[in-house]
Image 1 (cartoon, rainbow, N blue to C red):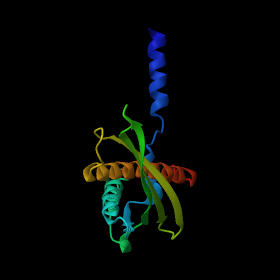
Image 2: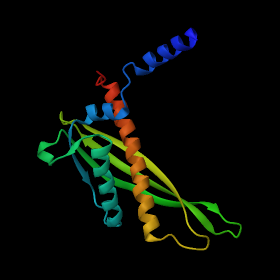
Image 3: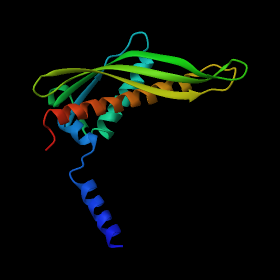
Image 4: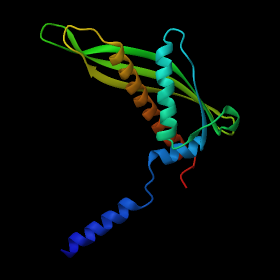
Length: 171
């Protein structure tokens, strides 16, 4: 019984020692005030708007930062759509596609308060199903793009967190 208690006490002490979530390091790297700019694609303006909404949501929820004007920003975040693709991944017994994978590649660059520009690429994926012998509806398509963009932004948060940790922002 004493060994169990001692083991639990050691586990609690070790697990609680200086753990910080990745968003902590991302926030340190990007700052509290962020200006987010998404380049609108001429070929696909509706998807650009979806990605803009996903970026704004990520800035507020994942970074815990505020969206501000460009003049007041600690970091200027510029995002453009690299590519959006839909690939069939599952077929039914008659050869009809019943599941797709959506892949969104986002090209991102950010300028920190020291005017240093960093460029990153992030890729997000999302799988979704459709009825056999049917087409992908606009609603399915937009939801898939939104979720894949959100996944790409999660990857971006991870990459920024690693940069924040490497740059000594891990007080």
